[in-house]
Each structure stands twice: as structure tokens, then as C-alpha cells.
Image 1 (cartoon, helix red, strand yellow):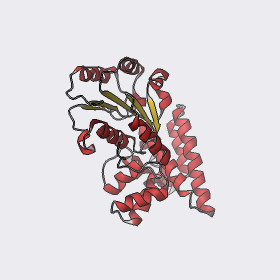
Image 2: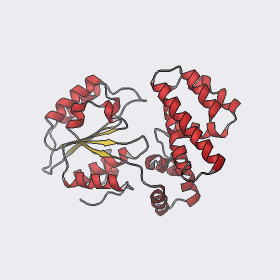
Image 3: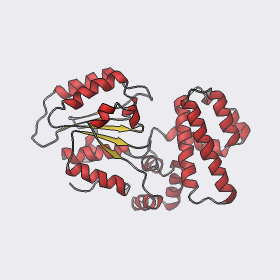
Image 4: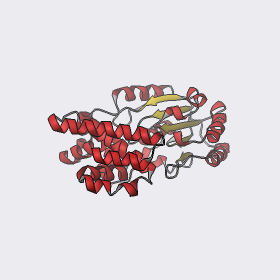
Length: 287
């Protein structure tokens, strides 16, 4: 197979090449939001179907299942998938149909059990690709029946070179990398002014860091009701801190370490169902 037109971490590249050499009927792409899992899924689909990546999303024999606004993917979506898989597909190549389930960790238990039946008896010529930020949210039986690729974050220097070759200005690249925390999918969206699920969280995280403590505190009443957005903002703050700490020194480094620590603590507290208003107030006082 030819190389994919994506910047990948060497370890991810090695895993991807091995998959393309000996593809299985099911693949799980594991990595944080913004790491480019969907882009990789579409490129792999194009490679194995023998079509251009730009045509994959609209291809008649490709089905992409996405959650709506962070909600669970229910059994209805899997039933629609079963109907799609029951249709005959022309062509004799090894793979002539692909299903991509984005953010598969949002599949409900009932939906996962229904999906398991498809994995146990996959239709001939069908490739199923699941993307997830939390593979432990998937049933062990689903994971055991699927090949897995860990989508790791490329090095900052490699990312800078990659986007420079695409014609982006060096200062814009550095700013986008600092904002995105070096996540390639989010960086591409920032540079290209295109939509990304984390874009709103990125904008809000930047605003919070630029504001005074008072300005941050008056936003708590608005934010604490939007738990999903809060979790995304905390994730972006963590990524920004990770990248900034690679070059920060002195007081700046201490400031980013504080942001990293308090954002992790706030995220853990929210996931543990702590009082979101109290958690956010504490965060605003410390960042």
C-alpha cells in the first residue's frame, strides 16, 4: 500500500502500515480528541476501497455514524447500520464497504451488544472502523475482536515542518500549535478556519487565560450548566500547558504547571460528579 498523506507519530505510522499490509475486518483508532483519528479513518478507508480520500464521506458504500452533541449513540443507529450492511455491494476487491463509528465510546451498552453481533459475523468485504478517546468504555469483547492503533501526538517540530510545507505562516503555525497543544486535527482546523468539535472549547480556554480573576468568576454561572463544554475546556487547558512547558522557564513554567495541575483536578472532580459550580469557581481562582 502507498503511504498515507498524513503526519503521524512514527509509532502510529508503523502500526498503520502493518494494518494496511494485513487489514482485519475491524479496527479501533485510539487517541485524544483532536489527534486526527477521523482523518486517519477516512484515509484508511480510501486506501482500502481504492478511492480518493476526498470522496470517502460521500461514497455510496461508506457509512459514518456520529453522536449528536455528545449524546450516546443508541440502538437505533446500530439497527440502521444493520440495514446498510444487508445491502449487496458490487465489486470483488477485498474491501468494498466501510463503516466508521466516530467517538464510539459514546455507544450505549445495548448498542454495543448489537454491534458485537456484526463483529462476530462480519459481512464479506466490510471494514468497520471505530474511533475512541476512551477504549475502556468499549466492551472487552468488542476490543478483543478488533485490531487497535494508538494515534499518538507527533512531535512539535515535525508538526511545524508539516504545516509549513502546506504554506501556512510560521508565526500562525506556532500560535495554532500552542493553542491546540500540538493536536494535529485541531491545529489544522485552527489554521484553515474550519469547524472542529473542540474549536469552541479552544476559544473559551484562550479567553479565560486572558481575563482577570473577576472576569473569569462571572462566567461560572453560565459554564457550570454546560458540563460537556467544561470538560473540553479543561482538556484544551491541559494540552496548552503540556506544550508550553516544553519551553517555559521560571515564573511562566510555574504558572503553566499550576494550570496543568488544577485542570486535571477539576476534570477528575467533574467526572466524579462533584458540584460543578464549586469545581469551576476553584479553577477560575487558580488559573
